[in-house]
Image (tube, rainbow, N blue to C red; front, top):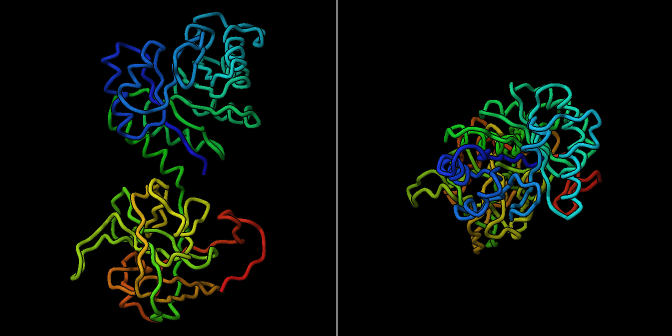
Length: 380
């Protein structure tokens, strides 16, 4: 799933009125704020975030220069019958020719403005579209009309509920939303909605354990994240890219050690880890890398690696059968390392036995540098 961005609209009213909105956006993980050109430096002082600003001459220091305010885009100027000769389209073209990243802003009032937005989208990097009444139809039409263009469509919304609809319109949805709300809860929920749509879900199914065999010493990887996890939540890991086990986080106390809910003791250095639609070797991970956290329902969210610990420990081979496949993973032989059972309850590898059912993710095709490809491959 492609990244979905959340922009915070903060161009109306005084700076103090917009400051809280921008700060909440920063703290919630929004991707961009839209302000007037005179406020760009003030936003930079609040934190590190992409800034889009209305400024026809492009001299704002903003990351994205936006045209349309005070022009045809918001109806301040008459909408021309010949779109190509319009003031806003020409301004966007000139700024693009200067090498600037350009956004076009259009307030959809009727079908004529929808056509105008399509023409502006052909020359801009971003198309920011709002409406007097929120309706999904203009978005559907714009997605269809501009699907072959490079432009990213940012659709104006006033709530997280509207944002979810915008993200899911047609097959691809809007590339992002422009949220016009000062409600902290709406800002946080909108960002949360974007991240959920990005992550999608992983279809999990039960596999029956066929072998549990202690091995000798090997190098295993602990993935410590910047995120807290819950029982039944962890990462997909295995020795074959065609199928991986859901390895539970260390989110439960044990008689031997306190819970470390930020950690997944992920297995041997050679193992695959599923991240989004790709895989990586555990040995490749570094601080700051993204990882995918998965729960027993297959729901996914993004995590961030804070630290990776590779240490020599006694290892254990685990094999399981799912459909016609035999899957394997090599994990540390310790009570605190757990797989997730069929019912979502973690099962320690120290108590794992043949016949137990655990959750796995099956994949079709092979992998080449972590990317799925159509190729016959045998992994044992």
